[in-house]
Length: 394
Image (cartoon, rainbow, N blue to C red; front, side, top):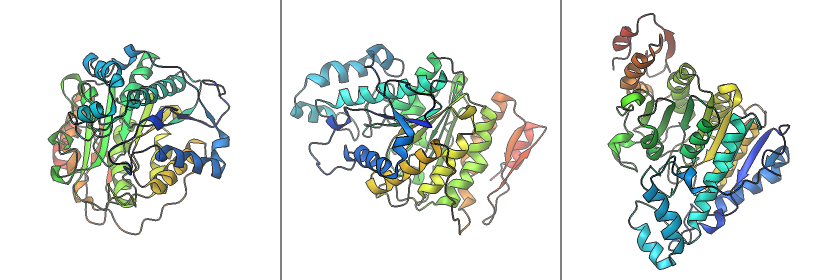
């Protein structure tokens, strides 16, 4: 279909047609490969869900748009230099970055992914489409303003946010559900109070990639953005539905509703799902869909999902299917939670953030961190924000 062909569709799916040009030529069985998208498309087709969606054809991207989130030197290195290199030279260039691979077509693939995300964001913000899922690669949330990193060349979520601002959005919530910290997105918006960035990620006290102290809970933003950056670092592997639901209802949801966004972006990494060999977490696809279902209650349903990680292709495709199903208007399937969450780390990770956010917004609704090994906490309203110091004491 043409761009924004129908508002009557239940949701819109964006595929970047050049993604097959981007692959690892050294490790030919690398899991971040074109098959990720093709398998997801196949599952959506076989289930019949793809017939309920529209696919968009989007125009090429102006280089100037890329510079909204990335430095001129970074854009030029990929679009003017790398695009002209042979494979051997690209392999050497990739060594300048952390966990990056490229082919001569990688820059076009990444540029196409950004274009898709920007056009979907524009369509949602201007009420031309209700919501969307950008099934694109390479992923983006590790790419910062100045550099590629972690399989990511350009930052798709940041670019979508910039497009949304261009077309009238005032407050954007970005929730990163990938098992890795969205360090690139954090860096780009770290001083911007228009964006609340929330990342729940495996951390293991810095032992898990990207091994950054900036991934910890005490990095809360700076300058005008102080208090608008939320890191929820998980220091144990094997966190499942109970853990993620406890984090969502006791940390993410209250903060998101207090922020009151007019547009929501989800960096949808499925390496946090049960069965992924990289993430080693136990989040189910159905619990993931519940998170999307409830986030859709914000911003009058204006929500854009953007694919990030996910390296067990079967797990990835099921997760994408469950989320597209929710975007199409179906209720998520029931989740069976049979054990209490590991609550001892869920609230202290946001303690510093809450102080700064409440001071910045003069909010009166805070989280009461009443925690035990069998309780997932409560949401409580206080009249005096000074009481947070006592209620959030570890």
